Length: 150
Image: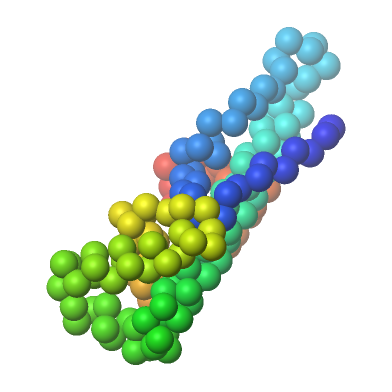
């Protein structure tokens, strides 16, 4: 079985929806497949999808962190000072700062929109304060979460 690694662009959103749209086929026509082998194959496919979702979230977390550090450099502030400044200023000032940052950033990197850059900065500030997610207790058999149990 060949493993394909999906390239995820650094500054573009990857939602869990795009990951779960992967076409996974489990053959039910093979007469040698019984319920246990089908369940095993299904669990393997689910674990691959979950691993890709975790990888995509890690990439987005790193992207937000890099972007925020560059934003701090643009403001000539350390991270804590930038957080405090961001929380104190109003929306118009945020847009002025973001548009100036994006204009400077676009000289060196692939162009980003001001709206998306602002979303990334706000997501970074929001998600940095959240406790990390605990890994599932049984990563090979996440059937409880599929059925609707946490």
